[in-house]
Length: 353
Image 1 (cartoon, rainbow, N blue to C red):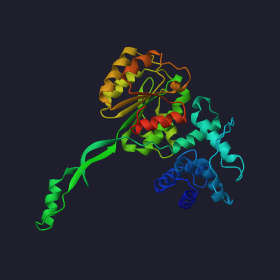
Image 2: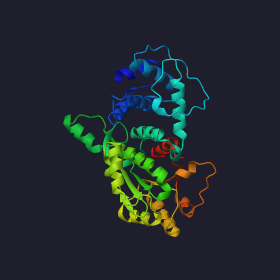
Image 3: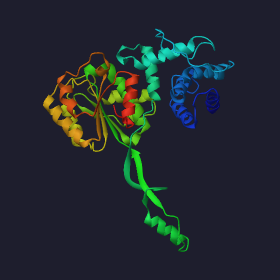
Image 4: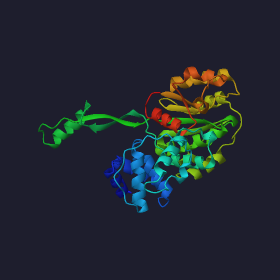
């Protein structure tokens, strides 16, 4: 893999040390003997822009397929209506249409509503979510660490002076440590969310695997269920099997107000980024939902509402649940596609919508 990364760098792809380590971490969750797993893990972690995709395809086929790599050509801007699935992307010859077709298929899949995907497309989305990386916003800890700048550490400076026998020592400084900000996800698993709940929970699995100590996941429907322990399984399929057994109210109704009240009474949301994934079809007391959302907004560092229908053309948040929640939301985003998940990942990293 490191030899492959060096070859990519020589071809102009910025596959630096950090990206190579990301590839190795991704392959630790996949089958490194499976060409498709290697292909998509590398493409997901080693490429930085669309211009890198043709170079990556050429080097991959040359390096693993025994073909002779020529000089990388500039990426062509191609308009195509090809909608082939990503599962066949690693095929094709050196000069065949595979790079253009795979790039087009990847872009189509990235923006397609998961509720409208074929089984093969959903399988590829699940593969990509298995190696999904979302940087986490950092918060200042109360603990200190040695630093080259910051606040003068008088104790460390005195200790250094005594160690030198009283001779003047270099001033020592300290700064606060940083930690990933805690993220709490509440995923609506009611009947109206059935087309999206599985994918959202797989995204939650990727977030838990990334920061297991700073991520909590709950399902919400007619009752609140904590899923963090189940989602700590390394294998996505095993984790989802455990989740399906743990959730007692799949495809039921939605009482978000009651479940949010229960969550806030049992859990500390202070300083956390709280993500609520729901379409807002509240069957309970809407006034209770509004009151609990107001309470949550006062406690949490940030409240993000993910609604899969927001990505649809002409959508308006007209349901009673969404109208009650909107005044207390910091970010209102879609949750229907890989592109929407990338936007959510940016918010978790500290970006602003």
